[in-house]
Image (cartoon, rainbow, N blue to C red; front, side, top):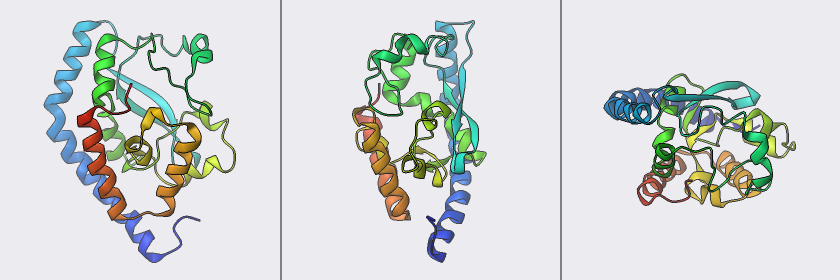
Length: 209
């Protein structure tokens, strides 16, 4: 069990409430930016959707649809198998530095992490938190060991220790260890540090591709 103390149980309860309040404020605040990004995506490819939704695995193995601004060509999932051998990360993750499926607009959105903004909606719905482990894909979880599955003990987040410690430059094993460290040291102080580091990482354009 992760939450063995009354203090941690209170932390989780208030974190969920805080997440929803802050996500609602963020949606209102960033609404003009949402419109601008949506317009830019549409003018580069009018026939394709602005948003991309993908099934992810959340707390205790529950699945949900995570939203992002579309950064890839519409048939990216259908092309997945042909690029599988080019995977640059060991373990149950897939990432290519120069993925040919990513659009020109998509590269800008990914580099600035603006493609992640729609996940604020997932936070408002309670499917994600502002801070927590990265929500994995079902095909990734299928390769998890029992040890790796400990990542699923808490609600996944928009940002976390993995994102501010190297992100795509880290191995799957390193990501798991960072997530488990976060889970076993849950605190407001840790969340605040991660959010501050996230802002710095986004500004400096570190680790995203």
